[in-house]
Image 1 (cartoon, helix red, strand yellow):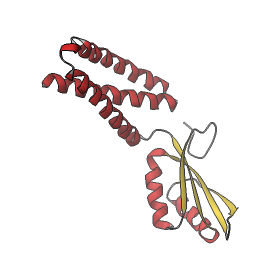
Image 2 (cartoon, helix red, strand yellow):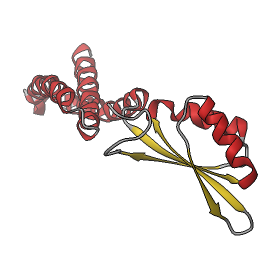
Image 3 (tube, one colour):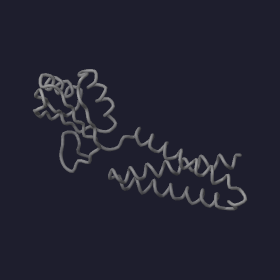
Image 4 (spheres, one colour):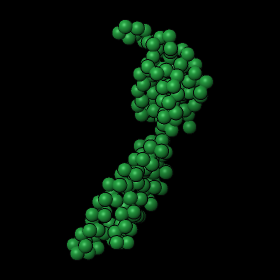
Length: 169
């Protein structure tokens, strides 16, 4: 049983690293992605060699390998979400009378806000555009819900190319 648990946990770690590597590379952290790749592939070589050795007489190894792969994907996505690399674009749509006060409150909380007047079906609206570190999106959403309960909020991942208040590396 210890053999199977070793396969399971090693595969969970390896696939979690794989998920993080992909995120690091897509977010422009190539050096970090390359370092993680080295550890990941080294671990993979040992695991796959161990599992494939005499697999036909012990197919349960494949079951624990597959289970580790599935759990590793889940764990990797959770960990990536906690790390929160990158930026999100947040758009908040509110009635015209709520736009400027909400923008001021968000600015006081340390968020950069661009305010644009828009036209809704029945009322004029303000659209608040923001680029926020992914780590802070949840904080922002809670603050907006507390300050303005009828806001329409959308969040999109983004990759800024140039400029922006507080966004340069």
